[in-house]
Image: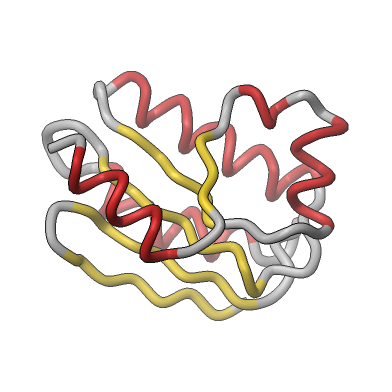
Length: 115
């Protein structure tokens, strides 16, 4: 898995490329650690448009990140397109818990209007 991380306006963006599974989840956790340790409300966009597969371990990382965002009074937006991950969220009933967006630009706009 390749993870790119950058700060844009008032949010942090992580773009993932590759499978989010038991072997790549530790890398994502490591990339998230400095982001999650910053003070104040978390404002995070995870771009998953180039993630073709996510297993239960990867889903656990997403859920723990969402829980952290909620604890800080912040927001997490997942950028998704129709496919495996959106289907996974639906069948696990997590689609009602995660905020999603069809594009990175839409997700960033949603976070900037809430500032």
